Image (cartoon, rainbow, N blue to C red; front, side, top):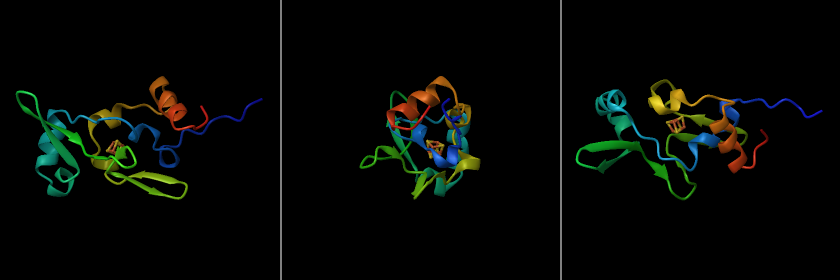
Length: 105
Ligand code: SF4
């Protein structure tokens, strides 16, 4: 029987790769009051300004993700965008992201 998978977000980070994380209006207001958070975003104009988390294109991941051996840590976890909060560990999207990173599901 296969070992149960531990969906530990701090040992994964799969969903922080390969995606554009859009900030909703509440996130945007919150980030705009915090220069340290705002620096981690990029603007996009589509009739109005919208913000996305900036990406480290070299590694195809969110700039807020800190990577050390065996640990994938969101450095703004308590302030992370709503889209990240809504992403459920163990969900189908989570498992799809893990498969794409070669992690067990
Ligand atoms: S803000 Fe945090 S949880 Fe969201 S994609 Fe970036 S590193 Fe991951």
